Image (cartoon, rainbow, N blue to C red; front, top):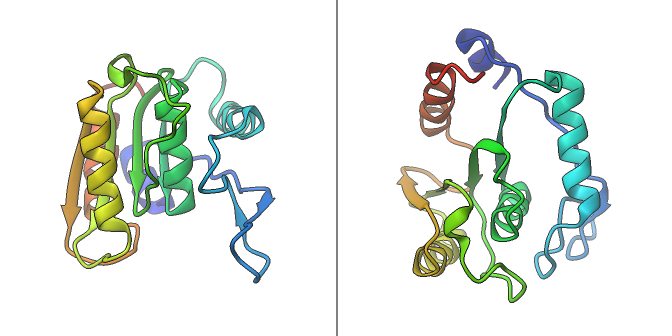
Length: 168
């Protein structure tokens, strides 16, 4: 990502999750528990990391992989992605939150990316995509060749479009 960002004249902030994963025993850290909406603390961590790295006047994009994608999903469902130039969730999803805003149409856009060989997450992302579109959400789903991974080419296209928009 750093090489890609440099080639496009972008800066990337990579804040780390701070909460132990409730479903893992290996001490991994997660952004959100799969059954809970994102906390105000998570939103604050992301915003502060981005502003610290990028400055207050810059617009920012949001890209989350795996548990980070679940965080992006939750932020989208609760309207917290409205201040981002783009929001991308890669490789994981949960069923739509019962606390999600009834109409996601004013939020977004949101891009969901999932590997064609990701047999666990692909059906979840397809289900989430249908549910958010049914609520009026501006949501796209792209399936790439591969498994549970952060794919270079689809991410490159998102970042290139962002850089070309002149808002970086």
